[in-house]
Figure (cartoon, rainbow, N blue to C red):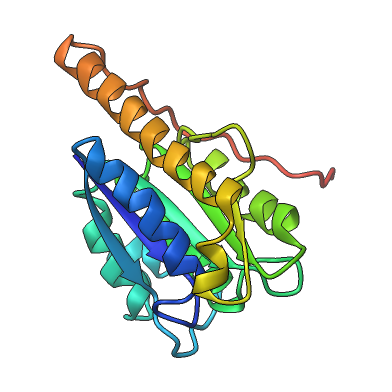
Length: 212
């Protein structure tokens, strides 16, 4: 089993990375392989609604989004981490997730993410964590991904990595998150071995609120 942890911070080894390392360490202790993927600090454009992903099976912009998509097919679970910028996920992380999930949904019927456990981790100096956390969770619940929870919202606090390492409750939450994800992955594996298949995916019904 393998979990991909996505670092959406412009800093490769900053506070968000520190939190993800705690989750990864907990997963490793439970026998789950991990990989931390940094989206980088080069500007990432948002989705331009060109719909080409439905034709070519990937995003038309060939950058970190497509690199992660290729890795996602072999992963069993995901943790998406972001710093808090103005009470929201970072701009690059928002653009990254918009394009990642939309291109996968349109291009491959969500084979990379559907029914795979997911969690969000947010990092802030002080405030805005719950708003950013809520934003991140919406990507998972619209993609049919089981959400992994803990006994608190998945957040750490600190302006520097060394500050995060002093956030006892935050570090405990990260540890528990990894342990809970490992448990859910083992449950899914046991179910698969017992012959329990994931739900059949039906064609989606699209409606709007315009009346002729």
